[in-house]
Length: 51
Image (cartoon, rainbow, N blue to C red; front, side, top):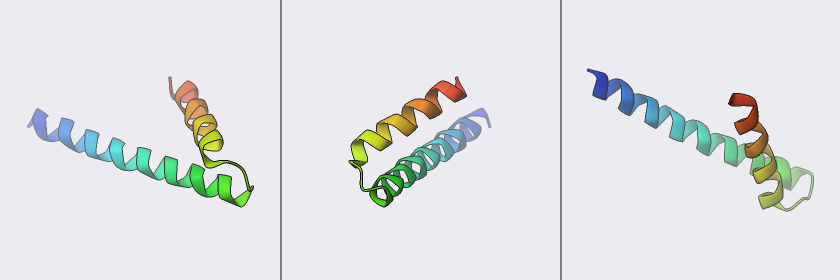
């Protein structure tokens, strides 16, 4: 039963990470900035806030 919970958590985490990167990329394109710069900045900020 623990394995199912761990697997479900990993799947949810991967989906959330994908949505975060796609959202950051969309934000970058709306501001006409390089997507890599915005993605790295938003992901880094999210990592610091969550830690």
